Amino acid sequence: MAIQTVLGEIPAEKLGVTLAHEHILIDLRPIVAEPTERKEVFYQKLTMANRYLVYNDPYTLLDNALIDSEEIAIKEMKLFKAAGGVSVVDVTLDEIARDPLALQRISSASGVNLVMGCGHYTNASLPEAVHRASVNELAKGMIDDLTVGVRDTGVKAGVIGEIGTSAKITDTERKVLAAAGIAAAETGKAVQVHTALYEENGIEVIETLKRYGVSPQKIAIDHVDVKLREDYLYKLLDMGAYVEFDNFGKEFYISARSGAILNERFAYDLERAQLIAKLVKRGYLKQILITNDICLKSMLCEYGGNGYGHILKTVKDMLLDQGLSERDFKTLVENNVAEFLE
Image (cartoon, rainbow, N blue to C red; front, side, top):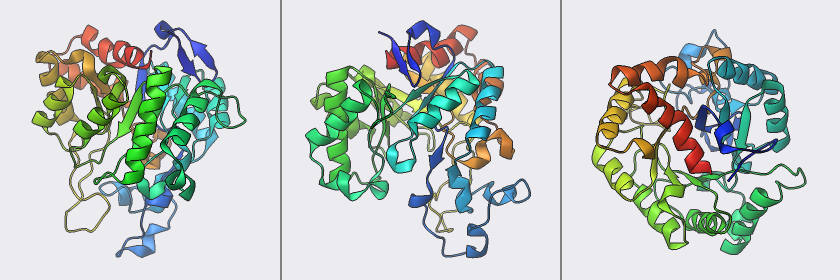
């Protein structure tokens, strides 16, 4: 089966080195609450001069939650391509500023294949129309995005997700998840599911999607690498799903006393690499996806971040140093993504 990109279908073998979960353009500002402290800096624009403010807590500046420049996006994609990258899966949804025509322009200008997502994000971002819609109406919307195109753009999605779930999965989120299951079962497309960073909701997610006829091999449980829980990962893997280490480049430390949106430290990249190596040795190589989930302006090269090439420029060496082979790395960044999306 071919892979659907925003510029049309390509053979799976043309996907090449692929980032499985990213955001080229995104606006997370609607779900970032104003802090109780340091309000005087919250509304500053991010620059190289004040980037230090978001080093530990990325939401110290509201502007850090916005990536909206096509010009910068094209530059970042060209840097990714120069590092050896070929394709990117963009799982931005309407609630956080999905723009199919912009993705087409960025793909054309950069030469990077872009696979677009569809569905609905976390409860805090959802419009009233999603809360009111039936499961079948939501499923039809996803199926139309995958088979006809988004709205009147004619640009087709190639993957379902990232479907949003919160720490406590809400009734609407369960409805959206059910709709994603229906759409996946009908179209054969894969499903990426955003799970709360510090919770273990992936098991319920997999069980729900399976009830609607989705094979676990078409399910990716995202964000499993913020808080590393080995036993939890084995449960997900033994259910047959993919686990996605998608926070490479995010090494934040936020005190639990801060009152911030994020309230625990993120695992460090080396810790992620060490755990991946352990999972590979246990035989789970073909169920792991690795990527950066760039959703913050400060992660871009333009603002002093690692950019989309981080996996190829730094993480690869970490994994090889932990005992993975070149073939193992190719499996992680090429074969696994292609098999997931096919």
